[in-house]
Length: 152
Image 1: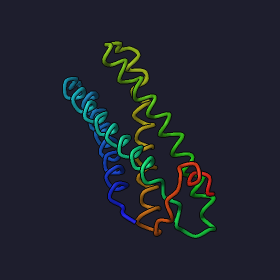
Image 2: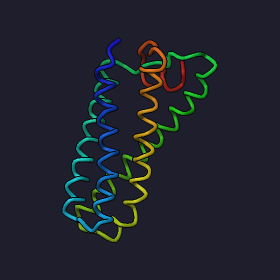
Image 3: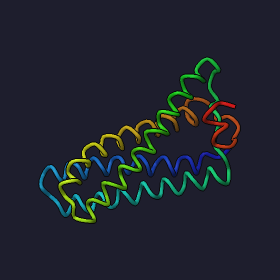
Image 4: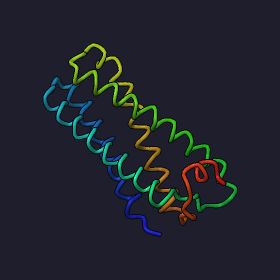
């Protein structure tokens, strides 16, 4: 089983999380143009992650947890938490970007820090899923996304 696509997609989500942290730092230092550029790159990296992940899911499938059966329920719970968080973070990211592009800075400033926190946790949990699936334990078979999420 190749881990090339999962490595690429995970790399982009981690890079996007790092860029969000850098963008947060830039805006705290009142470097607005730098903040804007960094956050645009963070959004591009998150989009590349999403496209890579969806393509892999559609054409290859998702990987079952290959670790011990005793850890499977904990892993499945963690995976569902990550998926919900990633979905919420993605929607929040789109809303936050829309506020920025529409120059609604009051709304952008309110939601931006929350979006960043959700995205950091999403990137960390996504990297953890990757580590558990491909580095610590051998990946299991590939299957449809719902079969993998619910352990069927």
